[in-house]
Amino acid sequence: MPTVSVQQRHFKTLIALVLAMTGGTFLLFGVAKLTPVMHVAPLRADARPAKTWTQVVVRSAAADSPKGFFHWRIDEVGRLYQTDAWANGQDPSGDGSIQVLISTSVPGGEVTPKQSRQLTRLLADLQGQFGISKDRVRVQ
Image (cartoon, rainbow, N blue to C red; front, side, top):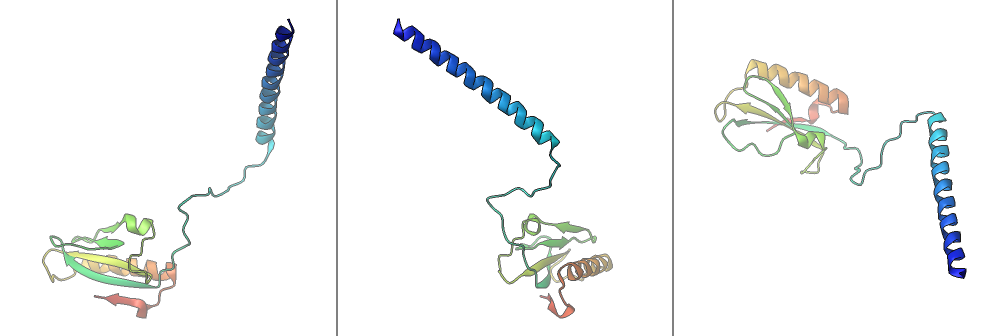
């Protein structure tokens, strides 16, 4: 019979632990509801330092030709598109260049007035946001 009393002790201990853990959980939940809400940035495994953009490179390409890498694109009717490369802070050249592509209908085609106005607005915004001087804007 000594084994029966040992088993009963184990069950009593297990029940006491379950009750204690349940009570502790409810206590901590109640305390958490009383604390003020704090805004904390979550930690991420892919955290990167902030990108320092130092210049803007503007180039044009025909709509049917390979476009290469770019952050922003202005299409033939003047609409502005932001790429995932910009959202993710990608800089394959490593020199801090913001790449802007102007799509033209034919190779070597002229920039339309709508594209020109959109480019002017984009450049003003980028220069103001990142402190890029006018002499750091290049056209290729």
